Length: 296
Ligand code: R5P
Image (cartoon, rainbow, N blue to C red):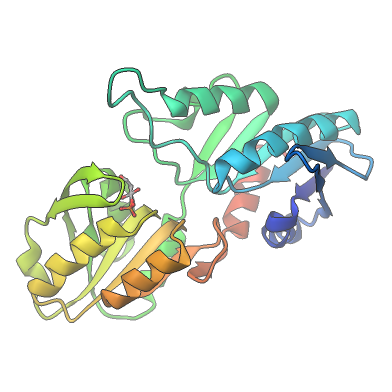
């Protein structure tokens, strides 16, 4: 099956790594912004077979519309099938109406993607109240792959036996998957979110960290306040060092400085969202999943 990979300017390096892992050609989707803010999207090459469109959806509001336009442009240029590879998939956390009148963003965005693409692959989406991604993205093959093996290898590289710490019950799935290959100890926190940048946290069993390296594990760093709350408790309990290992790092430079000032170092993430913490490339895992689906 012929496949080509298409990235936008900001996702070109990741798209290039994926294309190299697949042995496929890689092209850039051209975007021109009109003075009024609308985008003109153009695919300048003829396409056949499967077109793999690569874009992470951090900064989702700005990127989603161009993504849908690019899917249409790929079809107009001959693509028989358009598959979205969104290493970071936005809007998965609002999976219910937490207050009356709120939109359930996961359902809305999932349905939109299902309408415009023939398949979806993403990495460690925040699925909490549903078991599989196709419940959020119905009617197309929607695959959630995990970065856990990459993160587990990163934990093991130091050769000691750190305590792995998940800040909340939702992180349990990632922490346990990373701890399992090496039989590492795990504790899981109880988190209460009081606002966008306000969390309170308890860490039952935190005394196990005395005299040890602690590794905070989560799917995503957003403001960083979750990790800061956990790191303070770990230090108070006698951790020798506190570091962080996550799949997606969405934190701004200012928030990363705040995390560093709290002594959380190193902070390592995969390159699903490229940035200064990206230490692990996801391309090989994505390529394997794409081949497994028969898309390349
Ligand atoms: C939520 O449950 C997620 O797993 C993360 O813990 C959360 O999104 C992190 O957010 P922040 O960095 O803003 O505390």
